[in-house]
Length: 400
Image (cartoon, rainbow, N blue to C red):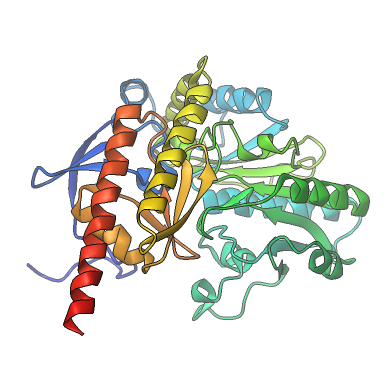
């Protein structure tokens, strides 16, 4: 076989999947894997969910693309539904989370420009954040490993230590347009931001004339047991970026904003060729049909609590491998003692897929449709993985 024609940007597992069924993925060789990564929190309703499949098939037989030169009925419906259940008045649809964050940044800067403050274009973000892979969003995230080799960091972004209110106040000045934060840092290690800190951010923004941006790309659409994670704090943003779960596996993102924050986004200020296409909108609406159904989010909360309790027991039983469990709902993290890559690889050997994160944490983010029986099965497979790592450490210690 010739060498791959693809960019070498991914360290892939070597597993190739043929199809999926609910929380299960089936490899091309027939092996079944319990998917506790959900394609990095994307497959919110699992694989091949019948309602999503039917919505996509029905739309595919009607219309795929017309561009945003014309009204798209699905956009109007999904936008209205999102506005009705959130703080927002307006929605701009994109194809990805990074694009949604770009739209959020542009919306905040344009707001300040229209307020007569063209010099206010800086966005303050927090260390450990991840906001995307575009030139602007890697600058917003500020992590050296993503910035290296891509030229000067895009201007207009200031990072401060997570949770450091005094450092935040020091960096805010006449150049500041907005503050952007993830209510739970996903890539950063499933680190929850205290509700009181979010309330302090809201007050600072109100006092200083800044806009508050929430990045709910990973935390949103039911992942924590609320429709959006910021609802736990009672704090509303002015602008919010979402993606991942809203498409249930189909590429969909969106920037939500209040009428005031988005007033400057008039014709010609922003656009997208593919964003909000009929296929994406059909699937997005189908996802909301399920997520907003009676008792769905209550079930996510209940299952999340059960899963976290079981994982806490796993941590207690394997202190040489694990040190802590964190997160809420079905956005959970296992802090590792061993290198995180070792646990991810060993879990895969035992038929469970998980996602590594910063701070030496394994992310556990199954489809929101996972059953209690499947939660128990997931913990059993993680238990087997931890035991295998302990046996490996014992053998390595004996050999020294």
